Amino acid sequence: MSISEERLFRISEAIGIKTHNKKDAVNNINLSIQELSKNIGLPTHLKDLGVKKKDIDFLSKMLKKI
Image (cartoon, one colour):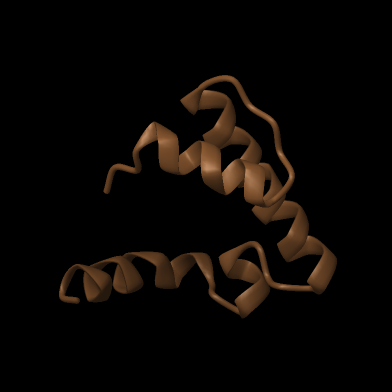
């Protein structure tokens, strides 16, 4: 999925981030989402959800079916 540069700039501005190009917008939005997730206690890694390394292959195959 591709998001237009204009849309990224609008999203950035809506969350209070000033950017000058698409790469900065994407990076800053990503960092903001990671920080928000951390601040509100959302799991940020599969291991935080109890997923074991041995389960990754199975989960990957199951997701391909969706």
